[in-house]
Amino acid sequence: MNDLKHLVYDVLIERGLSETTAKYVNMLILLAALVSIAFVVDYITKRILWKFSSGVAKRTKSNFDDILIANKLPRNVAHIIPLMFLIEFVPQVFSDFVYTENIIEKTLKVIAILLTLRIIKCFFYSLRDYLKTLPRYKDKPIYSYIQVVMIFLWLLAIFSIFAIVTGISFLQFFAGIGTASAIIILVFKDTILGFVASIQVTVNDMVRIGDWITFENYGADGDVTEITLATVKVQNWDKTITTIPTYALISDSFKNWRGMIASGGRRIKRSVIIKTSTIKFLTDNDIERFKKIALISQYLENRSDEIKKHNTENDIDKSVLINGRNLTNFGIFRKYLQTYMDKHAAINKDMTLMVRQLEPTPQGIPMEIYAFSNDIRWQNYEYIMGDIFDHVLASVKYFDLEIYELGLASPKSLQ
Image: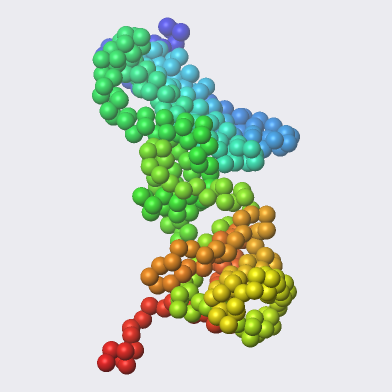
């Protein structure tokens, strides 16, 4: 090997060149030959690995190897052989230039560390893409775990690079880093917070990819598309993207609609305000008129007979309506809405369903429908709720009731 590295040098000396010039020309020729061989080796290695990996991928049923190829793992692995070749033969090329040899050797070692990181990154990204194809891991924040591992590997790589460049042993350099721990914590504050938050979010199953969340502090209202170590991306219903710090999920309050989606029903909770002045006791004529309404006809028949029997047995004077037991148009309207909701095909009957009277207000008495639609899709949910309250608003007048509307007084009342 010693004869080989000075082969050109000896020829140049024989041709009459000075020792200094011969050394430089010898180094440049050997360097050009070394780099050329390295490029050829790199090309051949890449071709061999690509054909081998492609052949294996075609023969296997799993798509993991296809994902490895798509993420360029074989191509990056192919760079290892020419890099080792360069590290092995660089001392021979620069044997007469110790200082330059030292710099280039350190540079090649740094490149080797970065190449190793790149290969590991390609493998982890391939693993992430593969796990996303499995239903069990589709909604898990795999990318957050990968980021945590990569951060530790990058820190290890940075420490190793500094140790190589400075010439200090790795253990000594790592021990010296302890004195700068406060600065490191300050620099990586968001990363540390994100790391802790990511663990808590995962362990407590607070958010998954695909969940619909509402985060008012950040103006987010939509589906979670990505969970990383530092951020959570939410695609809002208007197709904009909101980015939320991961640690905000454990420090602030937000709403996750996953429970509603899993339950198979979406809540309808809306009321109409009935004018108090239109509520009245029902006369026999009113009852006979309301019996024409199909949904409450049988109810009125049974209920009116029961009330008449009670009033007769107790000798109640019914010349005044307030005496004894009575039916009201407000109560009959509530029963009508309850029956209407019970028979509505779009309402989930296995979940809470009621029509209730709320506390009176200065405007009137709210009549609230509390139920769950059996279709949780937003567009269909809005259609169902609209259809129900179209009917409610149109049916009020049939019970001699009126809905409160805020408006100006008539001109006559102002005189």
